[in-house]
Length: 86
Image 1 (cartoon, rainbow, N blue to C red):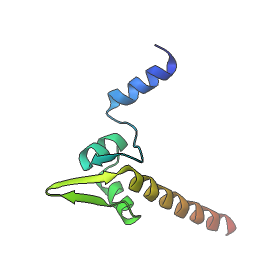
Image 2: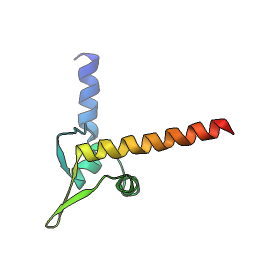
Image 3: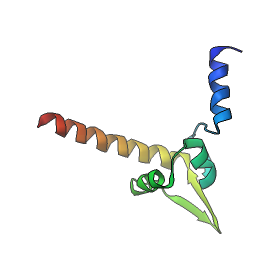
Image 4: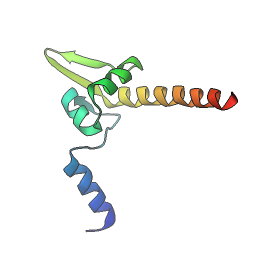
C-alpha cells in the first residue's frame, strides 16, 4: 500500500471524511465527517450554514458549509490584520 492509500485508509478508519460541495449530509454524518462538535456547528450556523429540516431529520448542504467556512476565515483574517496594525 502506498503512502497516499495509507493516508486515505486512516481517514476512513477514523470516521472522518471529505465534505463535498454538491452533496447533502445528515447532521449526524456531517458531525462525524468533520469532527466538529455542537458548539462549532452553531458558530457556523451563525455564519450562514443552515440545517434543512425534513420532518424530524436535519440535513446540511456541503456548499453551505464551505461558504460559512469561507466567511469565518475572512473574518479571522480581518481580525488578524487589525491586530497587526496596533
